[in-house]
Length: 136
Image (cartoon, rainbow, N blue to C red; front, side, top):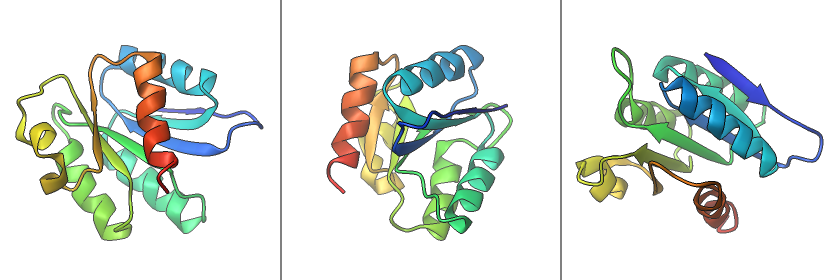
């Protein structure tokens, strides 16, 4: 699954990996309402390829949000490694509902820039993204 939302007033690009269709749909709507240009993927391999294409086209994503667990495919841990190989400066947030997961508790050790805990609200999503966009 690949969902792309865009309107002319959007300036920041967000790439989200999540395998749950409801989360993909809701987050896509929230990101659009918040004014972001969002691309939503449900497979780690698609996320890597989407990032690679954007980077090659000079249309780098400002923030990448990666779900840790993707059953039967590449999850956030594997995807962040591939993204760092392409772009050592990638801004990537680990997204999970498990605060005890080592990749959440020690996110920097796994190559992530920050954490977005599930379930998140529109306000938390926006504040988290803006904290990394504004720090650039």
